[in-house]
Length: 364
Image 1 (cartoon, rainbow, N blue to C red):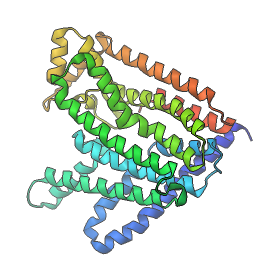
Image 2 (image 1 turned 120 degrees about the vertical axis):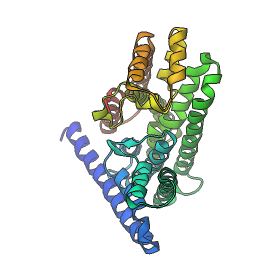
Image 3 (image 1 turned 180 degrees about the vertical axis):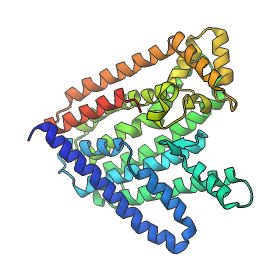
Image 4 (image 1 turned 90 degrees about the vertical axis):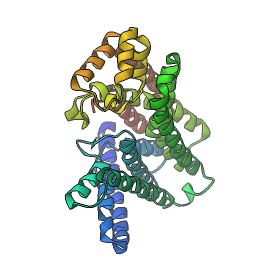
């Protein structure tokens, strides 16, 4: 069997195992929650919907970090860890969509919009939007609780004081900190020095997304398999720039992506007021009148399609898009250089290379 064939079979088996673990876990919790009240079923349904499908990037990074450190194929510990990461990701998506006022997720209504629609369909009292936000926050919190519960099921390797537990805890704290920095920049950014906007935006993507998308999941898998400190440092050197390239590509797609591929409306990030690295470059590099136009329109509730097209033109013409693409290329090159240095067998190294290539060049 070739390395490519083994990779495909092993990765397919792992993804299926994670899906099965999630289904089994949620089925048992469904009975517990239904015993409280069947009115809670929509919360459980929202969680099940979010953890079904998706790219499984974080779970796969965890798996190949495990395998690279000598862990056995499809072992229960790494399947459970992958499931915990998927539940954490689902919680982050639910809360992120509330924060960003995003009405869509993967081509359908976001969780808070689903609850708002439920309120309207049932003709309930008071405000449907407020109910939608409150119900979605609670759904995200429940998902976070399930993520912790699942991670604890790993057992001694994830116990308090273990390397894996330290990584898992740090990952969650950093995401919350990064989310706060993100919303802070939206409101404080217009009053701050524009010369520092790019560095602030890079710090946000590092802690809000890059570390928990690639670096921490890879290290988590390695730690569960007993990886040395040296290997974990090598994992970080590879995965952090990869995660930054991943998020920068996401920022580009948030402005220029095809809605059919991304599952989000065109220019959604602009309507949400995201002050990304791409936007920071534009604010810094565009002529003063165009920079002021961008500053005034970013996050405006009445942002029109014509405004989106004009902002796109400004981003392209001032060189902000090109500057972001250069950064993506630089981070990608750094990641591949560090990957070549990792002392891994052919299978995990090939798997990580393919994941990295798909991450940097993705269109959705």
